[in-house]
Amino acid sequence: MRKLLLYLIIVTTGIVFVSRLFYLQIYNTSFASLSEDNAIKVIYDYPQRGAIYDRNGKLLVTNQPSYDVMVIPRELKPFDTLEFCSILKITKEKLIKRLDKARRYSPRVPSIVIPQLTKDEYAYLQEKMRKFEGFYIQKRSLRDYQTTLAANVLGYIGEVNERLIAKNPYYISGDLIGIDGVEKQYEKELRGIKGVKRIQKDRFNRDLGPYKNRRFDTLPVNGKDLTITLDSKLQAYGQKLMQNKRGGIIALEPSTGEILALVTAPTYKPELLVGRKRSPNFTKLYYDTIAKPLFDRGLQGEYPPGSPFKTINALIGLQEGVIDTQESISCNMGYYYGSRGRKLGCHAHYGPLSMIPGIANSCNAYFATVYRRIIEKYDTPQEGMDTWSKHVKSFGLGKFLGNDLPVGKRGKVPTAKYYNKVYQYPTYKWYASATLSNAIGQGEVLSTPIQLANMTAAIANRGFYYTPHIIKAIDAKPIENENYTIAKVTTIDKEHFDPVIQGMYEVYTKGTASFLQVEGIEICGKTGTAENFTKINGVKTQLTDHSVFVAFAPKDNPKIALAVFVENGYWGARYAGRIASLMIEKYLRDNISRTDLEEWILTHSLEEEYAKPYSGQPFKINQ
Image 1 (cartoon, rainbow, N blue to C red):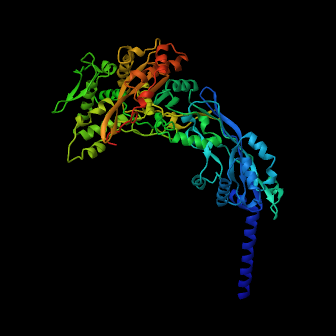
Image 2: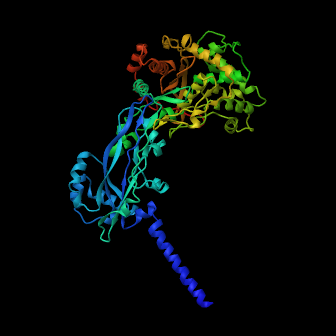
Image 3: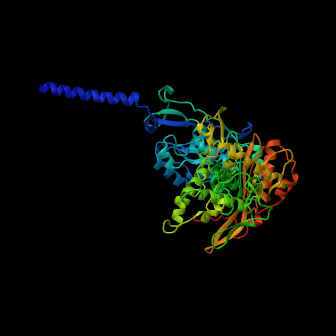
């Protein structure tokens, strides 16, 4: 029995050793193990990154050749560091630092020493590479921008960091990745798949040829081409109109949610963040804390929406049955409320006004009355506030819209919970009058320009919207993402939209934007003046108001909906309204008949306004 047990142990041990040997030699061919094998040299073949086109097929982004100086630390032999540094125009200290970093990353895996050589630098170094054993030149591609537009949309690429390498094994030191915009959002589609070549080496570290007859080599797979929803001509025109101004323009196609233009101002040229000049240029842009060119105001700027928000209160009032389209409300240069005779002021206009002329003339007293009725319809202000808040959020306000761009803010739509905290309820009670500024888009309500554009598209569609998005097709195949193809329905019944739309139409025909009409185009819009506060030495101080405008056209079967926000632009029709009319005519007709509006916008600058102390810094109440 003991002999049998001994034989059994010997046989079992033999089987284990043979099995392990068989596994290591035949089956264990994973990328990681092959890459770390001392006898195998791995060379990556980088694919072409996918191109980017606009909605009309205009090429926006393609590729240009680039060359990286790579090192495999364990293969380094003594070399003339001074000559090497002289060729690459790098200091000896910087070279030593980069070689140390490469050794720490992996002595056997290639790392970048000098990225993105020019063609001339590559040609000169290639002749001398035989003198620098352990180094080699890796060819890859950099972005080549065929446009000076939409840097905030397109984004840029840069080198991966150690944290991302640890998180995603696809990337190795020196790889490039999308860092912002479309480049980041659609990195997986754009990057393609790296090809891999494996070279067998002998014990003297000499190349013996392809490993296992190229059995484990792979060819690169190029990235997919993207078609984005931008209309580059409209984008260019928007950026032209926003010169010497700060703010954003968002234009959408209401029937699809496709983003036609996404302008932020000030901005920068995308070519600034390409190649070896990317790092110093990025530093300059990043530390420009005055103009903030890297800050996408269209997606990230949170502002009081101002009077365009009155259209939402009108719709909620109709839905809740607290007002109809016929009732007229008086306005004595404002709305008076409270035991102390407080007043919410209003500009001069005829009256009393019903809903349609109330929208056309932007009457504060009318909408203060409607708002109070909404809140006070219910037994408690808390219940009324939450009902109101639910309606507002159904238009995409106060939350992330779910669009396919990597930055954005949710804005703010206050709730009963928020006011309970502010007023320390139940110790102190609050009523509708305490929140009356919400009636006119001030107070605690904050929105981003893209949210205002989406709200306007929902009104244009008579009660629904599609999530705004920038992707149109991948490799010429239209998107099928349900988030962008299934409509989101508001809480307002369809029949309530027509009077509000008529009011917006009369804003142009006889209201606050009557001088902005474009002959032959039925435009529906709403002016807005958003109060602008900051704190100076701890004191709340009012600065020059922001100019806001929302619009869509044509009135029936709308093709474009937009929001324009110009910081410190005085009042809605002054800057934002002019820009909105011009953008609509440009998109629908591709030419401009209102050259008077165009000339005014192009010859008026707000730079002097922005030069004032503290200008352009919106104050967020109770934030």
